[in-house]
Length: 276
Image (cartoon, rainbow, N blue to C red; front, side):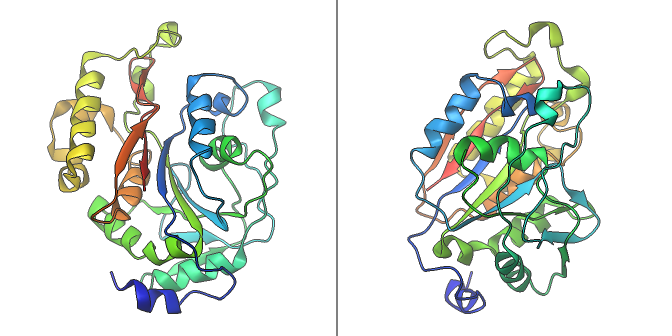
């Protein structure tokens, strides 16, 4: 990664900073936006450890597109991209500004990949439902980068590496999804049981955590070859790929730590990752 050359591609809008952390947040149910629980407390505790960012770049499981896009509007709308939840959740607004400047910087850094400047999307719940706990005043600009569903995990890992220069411009990069995420198998009757997971989910969580802590990222990129437990944990890739973006940004001497590391409802995990 030629960070020095990449820094020259970035506009002078953002001041130089110490290298920012990188996060993967297990976002779980949209209800985490308005409920009080241990995971929300985990996000707030995390916020106390973070330097104040100049802006946030979020890669959310819920913007899965053909090709790569980045939000470039001045004021992104709050998207309520779900159904069947209480009206209180639909009333939530997260009025963070966007950053057209950061969108253009991101577009330049990802060349030769073509990145479309998007003026339609906004902030989906993968972004705002967790970022609101980190920055409840909505006082940090937020943009989103979409995930190209036609590309492999290896492609996404390498694309993420091109974003590394943003970390020295005060940009907090957040992947938002869930590692174990099989909605079809959720045990809704046991959602309140602490750290409850089916045997395969327990195995998948332990295996992924081992790979994470050992730095065996190639096994995580090749997750489809890691056995049946991971196939059940990751039946579709959209909630998993934000983790791959986070891992692509890890530098050699950085520490990787886990938090909110629990299973939920048998077939979900809230495991989150911090690189710093």
